[in-house]
Length: 236
Length: 236
DNA sequence: TCATGCATGATTGTATACGATTTTCTGCAC
DNA sequence: GTGCAGAAAATCGTATACAATCATGCATGA
Image 1 (tube, protein in one colour):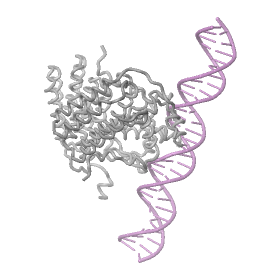
Image 2 (spheres, chains in turn blue, yellow, cyan, orange):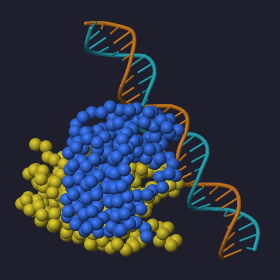
Image 3 (tube, protein in one colour):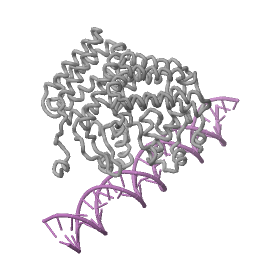
Image 4 (tube, chains in turn yellow, red, purple, cyan):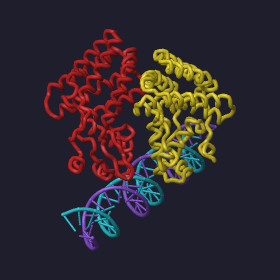
């Protein structure tokens, strides 16, 4: 049987052209290899990926639609530097939509979906134990995947896409303003939410979700971080 | 005092380049001058607006991000032809987010905002009385503006943008599947919602909003309509 | 010394050119 | 007349070229 969450597994491996560049830069942003404010020159991006400025520009344009990159006319593209107010709006949006997504997902969830969620939870826990930058980045990604998987299970492609944008921008905000080690408490909360869903305690699950988002937001602090540089971030 | 709804008034008049083309095509789609399935060739769009394919392509790309245009690799761009399932997802998304937006808006609403909403209501009623294509199109637009204004009042730019996308796509769906004359009952419902907000009956306002959306959706005939697609009509 | 203006370089904005893919047309065989 | 193969046309994908705009630094003068 085909799980509803299978929508997450896209064939990203064989894609080419602008989408590939877009995804590569997005990953770099979400995983903090590129810091907010970093300039993304069209020429540099094109040279890095061995394509023309045309494709580089298309990729940057796409990322600007997702709110991860801000393009300023005649000045260039920069990794988005969300203001504290933007950060609040992002989390307000998540508080607004995630309970609803949770309810939809709970109504359609299958045993294999629950299995998938628990798998993610284990992975998350494993990464939490490790040290270092890479583990930290993977942890951010895993934490986001929990929410994205719920959106996928909900079966609404539109809400799923919206959540992808919100989660990505959240990562950017956490990278900018997060003070403690990301969502260390989030892991346990994810487990609680799954548990509540499994036992059909919908109201409690929504309540937990709202608290979870509030906890992430409460961990934010307004502090500036400096950039890495485009080349270093992509050196293989 | 500056109303929260002032975010709606953007300087669309002086914009140039791809954004102008994008907005022009979007208006044409939302106002039903362009029918779903219509091919939007890059060359044709470029010639129409006296720009190169580069800008035409950028505009079409932007519209594809909004879900109003679907681009098929090596085949071209077409006005989106939302499937019945997509239509349901769009309205499911609206049911999911609009009550939350309504609550946010109610918490921040000012007397001048209420004035603005009532103004929209009057305009809507005026258009309802008229006959003809143009009045019908304007009515769709005015009906959408009510929801967009609420989103603007909520003060969350992210939700506002999302609502803009949902409303635009809703217009597309209504154009495709709507059977009666749009939201003739919607006008009264808009008034009821404003009234409920004004008297601080939040729960009732949300309830009305959900019913309102359900009514619009109930007016849809989610079966196939042969209004367009010359080829499909004769070749299938 | 500091402010101002201009020249120069770098970067983006837009258009055009060329190659790849798809679609359509044509013509021949059956 | 039907069906298929190959050519021709149209359209998209990508790269490159040129124009416009912005940033930088130096010269100049108060």
